[in-house]
Length: 332
Image 1 (cartoon, one colour):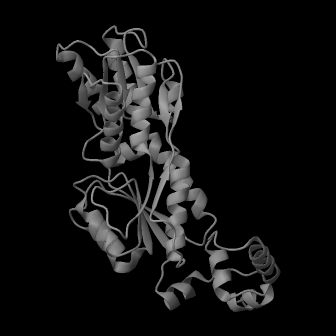
Image 2 (cartoon, rainbow, N blue to C red):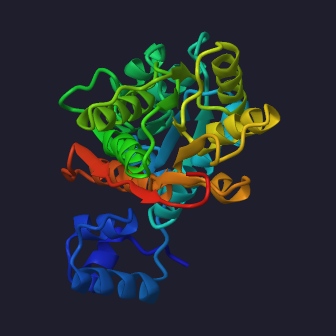
Image 3 (cartoon, rainbow, N blue to C red):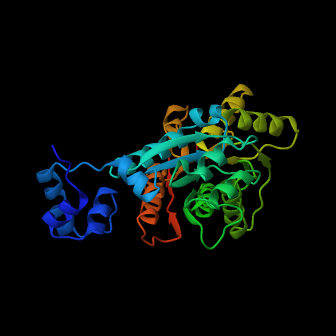
């Protein structure tokens, strides 16, 4: 049986070839009428895109890389990544692209960089990047890239999908102030990452608006173990304990809670704790965690949509900021 061509689909649907291409690639830049006509033509003609022929003709792989500059322990242990990948995957299933996952805490042999720069993928989504991840810049020079979270050094040509980390930090501080706390501290994320820096700045801004300063700031990595170590350092310092703590992620908050409870400190009676993410960790800990919700799944979907639009020749917004939301539970 002869394979139907994209031109035949376009003729049957009464639309242009580029419109069919956009529908096949999952672009939203198609009218409902055209979308319906193309989908009906695809069904009638039993059209299946010929990936091999398209790759040879266009020099495109129809593959996208998700690049995560972290070690595998953090990637598979942090629910943030699971939610983001689920969102990316959901959007990708509505396109003609496949997703390649590349986890690389660094790239000393430049395997990841070479794979991308030598045509392994058509574009990349990069999440959880650090100031030391110089290989990310080389990747961004070779293929279209969407950053999940703003890079420290942003270029006008960059595409960024982020959450409002500054507002989230500010809302966390304001909530604790409204609850009557005045001696408030924080366990930050790694300050080599923009998300951690922005949450800290927002937290400080919220305190400053009330004429307060943070009584303790302890840096922890975005991991349960690093946050637990930060909590132990806070207790060992001998300084007066804060009345409340803003912890930069839910996973980190779990580590902090374990250390505080182990020292006989009651939550929230002795110290109130508020986290960030609203992952499944927030409802699994005891007490359930008051937290700042970030739309992780929606961030994944949006990153994929922006990159697919770029690859389709469209012009999406270069910066998309998604809102955060306070979720009140029992820990603060």
